[in-house]
Image (cartoon, rainbow, N blue to C red; front, side, top):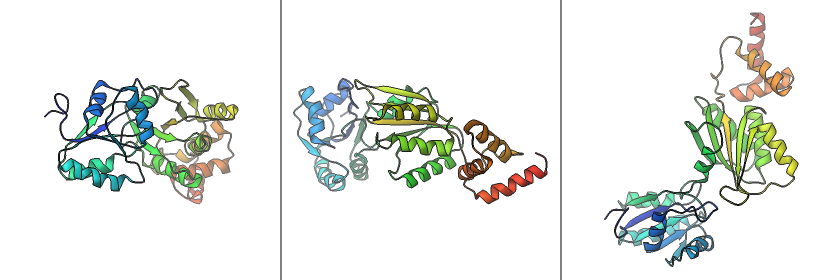
Amino acid sequence: MSATEGPLAPGVYLVATPIGNLEDITLRALRVLRDADRIACEDTRQTRKLLDRYGIATPVISSHEHNEAERSRELLDELRGGARIAVVTDAGTPGISDPGMVLAKAAIAENVAVYAIPGASALLAALVASGLDTERFFFAGFLPPRKGERKTALEELAGSLPRATTLVLYEAPHRILDTLEDVSAVWGAECRIAVARELTKVHEEFLRGTVREVREEMEARGTVRGEMVLMIEAQPTADDAGRGAGSVRERLAELEKSEGLTEKDALKRLARERGVAKSELWRELQREKARGR
């Protein structure tokens, strides 16, 4: 039987749910949730709010990051018998920085049908209203929480980009200022960004501008709340990016002018961008100066 009409076919249904506003649910999603044999959800209490809103009494069972592997084995036994299992997270699309993929992969390996029921996604909602390029983007989910690891992750992302790309990240409010500091260290204070906060909720907000402008705005507030999506107009900083005649001198001049850095500090920044030793860049700078470039 089709997954789009008639009685619900056996299989796994990955159902996108609202990211804030409970009206952001599709008619198809409601039908699947109502007709499924069981709903596996990240937090049964959170999902129950949605189900109660629409009068859905389908039994629920928890399936979150701490028990997903074990729970998936249990649900797979039911699926082998022809069950119809809907999978939801607290908000958004299952499997996108949320549980869901463990069961989906296990089901596919067993030749059990897996259906996607599309709907709300913080990633896409933020991106299309960001004002940044939507033709080419890279979603990296959550960065490591520790400062050193987070900055290294950003540097690795910058070094892997073949061309300018909108980088999309999820971030917690208590880390956003530190993350913006790291973004500035990697791409510069004048890098364009957008921060989407509390998407689809009463206090939804987009902060757009340079890293410096957005960070100053947030710092002035004292307290920053709400789940956030951070989007960065990321430029590639691989070893060969921007190289050419006089490229070291040109990039240093840009950093000194745009951020007021000394030549020494600009050289440190460029070394991080290119993933090379500062001494190597210094020698190249001297060669360029000797050639009068």
